[in-house]
Length: 413
Image (cartoon, rainbow, N blue to C red; front, side):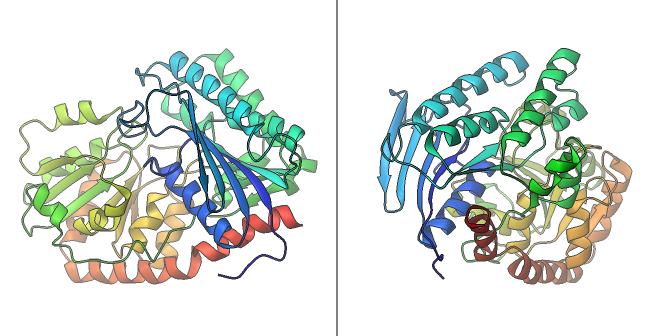
C-alpha cells in the first residue's frame, strides 16, 4: 500500500465498529483500516457492540466505556443506550442523543487532551454525530468530514416512521446545520448529493462530495454455492433466492413472501435480524420453501453470500434517492447477480445496468418481482455470467485503495 505524503491524525466518530456487524460498522471499519494502512493515526470513538441483539453483547457489559490501544491509534467504545423498543421514535431519538453526548465527551480525551488533530470523520446516521463532530473539531482542530450513509430524515419520512411536523422540522434544521458546519459532506451517489445540495445555499454546494463505499474484494470472493451455511439452513442443492441484511420496514421484504407463495420450487432465504422479522415470519407460516437465518460472524460473509444463487436488494418506493444499500457492493464482490426492487434511475439500478450484473424492477410491485425472479432463476447460466461481470465491475470501481485516497485528499487539500 502506498503511503500518504503526510501522516494525518484523525478522530473518527461512528455508531458501530468491528466486531459489531452493522452495515455502517463494516463500512467505517474498512475505511479506518485502509487509512491506517496508508500510515495515518486514527482514534475511533464508537459504541460497545450491540447491533446483533439490540443490546450490548455478552463480554462487553459492565462499563459505560472501554478503551483499547491499536497499532494505528485507539478505539473508545461507549454505552449505546440502545432502545429496546425499536418502534418507539421518542426512545430511539433519546438513545441517539445520549450516545452522541458520550461520544462527544470521549472524543475530547482521545490521544491526549492537549493534542491537536488534522481532522474529524463523523458518520450519519445518527444525524446527531454531525454536530458532535463539529464540537470535536472546535476543540481538537482540523477539518470535519461528514459521511452520510442514509439521508435523514428523508428516509424516515418516506417510510412513515416520522409523521409529526414539529419533529420533522427539527430534524431538517439539525440536518441543514450539520451540513453547514462541515468542511466536506460525503455522499455515496449523485442522487444523494443532489438531494443534499437542494437543501443548502449555492455557496455550500462545493463541499458536497461523492465517494462510494468500497468492498474488500480480497475478503469477499466467489465461492461454491454448496456452502456449509446452506447445510446449516437445511437446504439441498436447489436454487436459492436470498436477502441478506437488516430486516427492517424500509426493505419491502413482503416481496419475498409473495414470491415464495408463487414459486414453491424455489427456496427463499431472509438472512438477518431487525424490527420487521417477526411480522415476516408470521406471514411466512405454512410456507416450507422460505428460511430465516440469523446474522453470522463477518468472517462468514463470503460464505453466506455464496449460498444465494440470486440476491435481492429491495427498498420501498421513494428511498432509492436517499439510500444506497452497501450490500450491493458485497454481493457483486461475491460474484452473485442482483434483483433490485428500487426506484428506477437511482444509483443501484445504474450500477447494475453498467456492470450488466442484474435486473431492476419497480419497488413494491409483487407481480413484477415474482415475474423477474421466475425469469432469472430459469436461466442459471445467465445468472453465473451476471455474477462474473459484477465481480469484474466491483474490482475496477470500488477498490479500497482508491476510496481511501479520496478521503485522505479531503484533509490534505
